[in-house]
Length: 189
Image 1 (cartoon, rainbow, N blue to C red):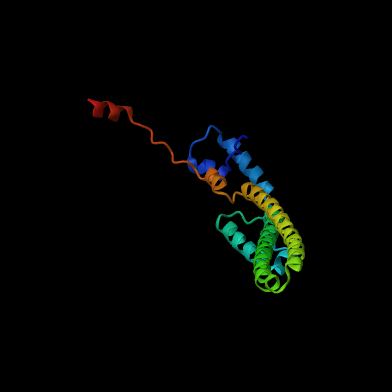
Image 2: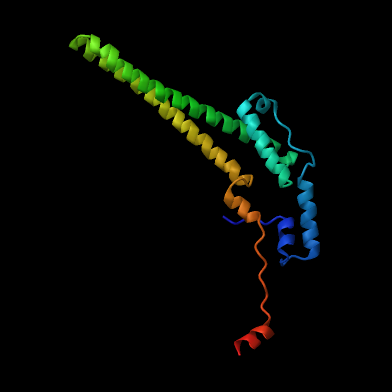
């Protein structure tokens, strides 16, 4: 996949480009026209969700620092915060189910199986195993949903420059120091 072109600000910081001043000015105008000029607003559903709201505050603070807090990205950032909060809620629910399975299994072995006849023990064990199977299937469903959400979150992070690789692409490379041929000739001899 081809790497996206660098923003004009990065090209100007690098101080080396094959583009003319006219081309750079045209690109700068085009970049500026893509921005709305207003800051990102928090959606009501994000405001109502404490986890999503906290993530929104964190991200918009970072966007302010790098001068990228623009309303053009509003929907993506709000959606990202909601999805992250949903993912965390699902992970918490999954942990609760895992703990319940362990607690129920322990209680079943210690209390129920210890007090019944061998025939009842077999019947109860079959029933209990079926119930644990259902709870395990629920855990697997949560795992799949969490994985889907994580994949969507990663896609948004890549698009929005929230990954290390995306951030590194926007950092200007150090300008190469041109060697002075006269000094090289003097130093070699």
